[in-house]
Image (cartoon, rainbow, N blue to C red):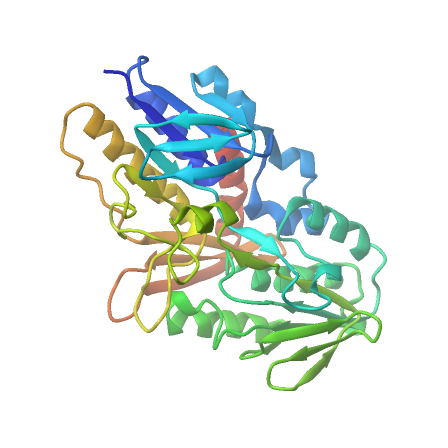
Length: 382
C-alpha cells in the first residue's frame, strides 16, 4: 500500500529527512516537501556574509532542485494542521498524509521590544547582507551585540560575530577606535553546553578585548539617543547595534495544538514523536529539556541528527521492520574566531548531571573544516 510522507519546512532538518526518505522508500511511496520560500541559504555562513567573506548567492540554492531526486516540492504557506485527522492545508489545498514531519523552524519577531525592529541583525540572509554594507563605512565607536531574548537558535553565533568583528576591524587598522561589547540575558555563554564551554568562550572574548555582560535582559532600544535599556534598569550606549530577533514557535503550530504551554512542540527526545500518531517534529520548533532548567540548543546539527533518526524509523515502519533509531544528543558546531581560525564546540548534550561538552581550538584546522563542511553540505543536498 502506497504511503505519503509529508514534510513541512525545507530547512536543514526538512531537507535531510526528504532526501533520506526518498532514497530508502520504494517509488510507490510519495515524499512531499513544503516550504514558503523557494530559496535555501546556509545559515552557518551568515557571519561570513556580514563581513563580506561570502556572497549571498554563493550560499543559496533553489529548493525546487530536490525534484530531480524524486521529491515533490510544494511552494506555499502552511495554513492549518489537523494532526489527529492527518490533514494539512497549504495554499487552500488540503493534503492528506500517512506520516508527518514538522520542521518549520522558529519564527522571528521584534514587536515585543520597542526599537528592536530598527536594529541590525545577521540572523537572516538579508540582514547579514545589509550589515556587510554598513560595516564598510563604520570606523569608530561602540559596536554592541545583544541577545534580545531566549531561546535563540545557534547560541554561539553572537559570540562568533563579536570575535569576527574584532578580527575585521584589526585587519582594517581600526580596532583601537572601536569598542565591542556583548550583552546577553544568559548567565554565561552557551548555558546548555555546561559551565566549561561557557568559561572557555568568556576567555576567548577577554583575550580579544571584547566586553561581555551577562544577565542583561533587553527591554527597549532608542535608536535616536543610541541607548538601550535592560530589565534591571541599567543603560548601555551604542553606535552600531546588532541584535538577535525574538524567536517563537510558528503560529500555525500553536494554533494546531502541537505546541505546548511553553510555546514550543514537545517531543520524545529519542524518537522525536509528538503526542499524535505518526506525527514527528524536529529542529528549532521543538523543545527538549535538559538538566538545570536548560533546553537542547536550537542548531542545525541537531535538526540534521533528528532528521536522520525520524526518516530511518519511518522508512523501517513502512517496510514492516522495527524502528530502532534513537537521537542521542550528540552534536557540534564551529565557532569562527577570525584570522582563518575557528574553535569547535563538541560533545553529548544528554549527559547527566551536566552536558559533556568541550571547546577545542581555535586553530586553522577547524576553520578549514568549517569551510569544507559548507561546501559539502551545499553539494550533498542540492
